[in-house]
Image 1 (cartoon, helix red, strand yellow):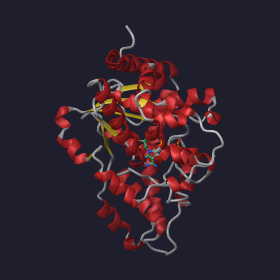
Image 2: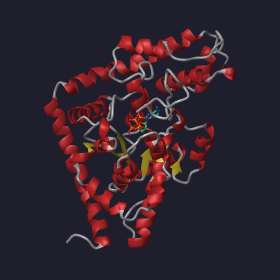
Image 3: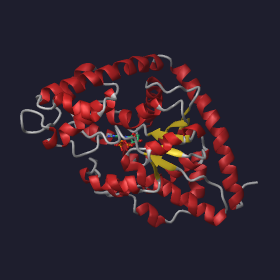
Image 4: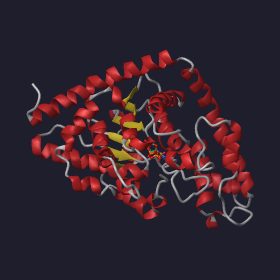
Length: 365
Ligand code: AQP
């Protein structure tokens, strides 16, 4: 089923995000850097990773990996919520592909914990314990549940319940910070509510996490439609929607050069529409240039110049990632060993948290 374009958040939603007490600004996070905050983050292996996943997640993780105590997970259990879309063989392959892309994006599996969610069974166990303390109404209110269930005749319990699984993912590791795109802030707020309710009912078991939304790359929009967030599900049904991390140069060129811009001939920043602003934002994120400088460089130029610069920046970024990805893909035994070590390290910590929760609830030995 095609996703619902109305699910795209507005500027009003962005300022709500800034005001939320569940959100830590990047400046607050840097100020706390000496304390090496514990970070949990993950990507679903539900399709081909794209430039939005890279700029909103992988690149940010890699950039800050030395300052933080990181757990990076391939959240394969989250990819089961729409069973009609699950092909077991593809899911297994995608989980390994996503893990290899984490490593290819520069994430070091020695200093960070990198693993696949389903390899650590504590995620599902804690989900059940939290299910029993989470009011159903909290889940029905989730924007993503509303948009993802809309128009479907039948919706799995998992689609409604997946924010509880996400809460378990985060709470298992005594996480301080969850780096997310704006659309995921609501789920971090819910995680805090779930943890607070459990702590209130059964004693202090869980640490309350905060979300941090990166300033750049927080919301990359579709090349074919800059009103909607670039997403794996749109990309499945629309050819020119996204640049995927493993696309070849020719395909990337076609997508970028066909990007929607404005109707005029040359760029006037004050009148720039969402397509042009999206391209400028992508360029700014990829080059780390201040936005003023990027705007000044293209003011009065044709859209073709901007697209060519965006294309060059994307190719320069993705070529080495693709090359490193191919090395990992060529040695599946080594990748499996990396993931098995990551799962062992994650399990050790997760088991401690589940033991605390079981004991607080009076179950288990
Ligand atoms: N377009 C985007 N711009 C910025 N950040 C993005 N992220 C995803 N798309 C963008 C961030 O990447 C992380 C992992 O997301 P995910 O793959 O687990 O789930 P998602 O956000 O649901 O990604 P998609 O592509 O939209 O997948 P589908 O279509 O399968 O739901 C998150 O931190 C996310 O914010």
